[in-house]
Image (cartoon, rainbow, N blue to C red; front, side, top):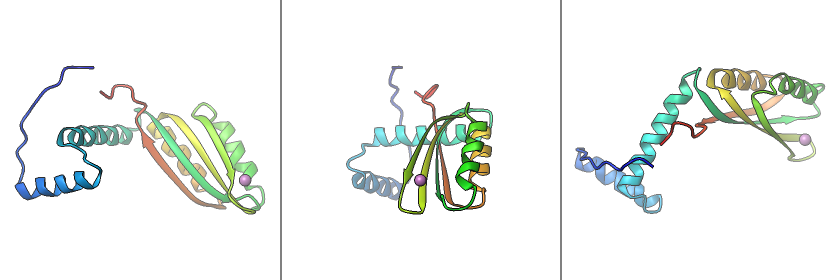
Length: 139
Ligand code: NI
């Protein structure tokens, strides 16, 4: 772990009050932890916006497996990107609906493109992509 640096921060008192009351709600986030978390969140957000950066992702897809050819199509597409999809979980939510969760690792641009392709397949009811850091280069 690198050495800790202390520094002063100037901000409007009412902004700090709001921040402290939010920290209270979050279960006693102290100011230092809160600022570290916010800085990391911003670094990760920024990294995930760069299409060339390597990131990790979680893609969820909800679809009705009774839609003709849909499950097979999604499986074929996933085989086409097996290098990016590092794990897949399929849950049968009820008689019709399936939840598929794909864990992805690769360049942010490739992951977004793959997610867009899968989400836009006719019959997919809802898809959501969450990108995050691989943890590398994130102090
Ligand atoms: Ni299913």
